[in-house]
Length: 110
Image (tube, rainbow, N blue to C red):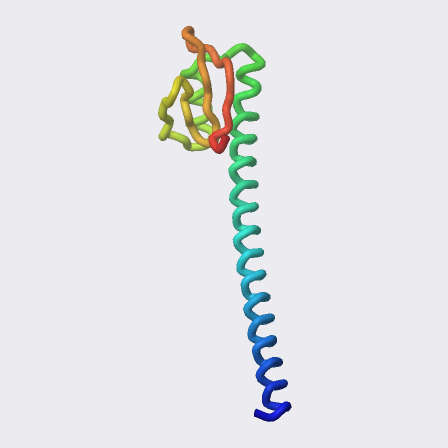
């Protein structure tokens, strides 16, 4: 092989490698941005849901029924479930004491 053919092959290999590297970086960047957006949306929904019940809690209306009805009405949530003593609805978990009063709020992704 002549020197010019070797040079062309090396340059071609470098071109393919650098293009593959840029494609990988762009795909990785796209996945990162998508993950960030989903995480931001989860945080925003949890904050909105928590802030919506804050006036009720401040006024002393901390019963399970009142809070769950408020979340269902305002956000259209209906698929709540209980696990390990915490009632999960939307992006938040609500922990109530024996008398049905709110004592703690948890994030769904924690």
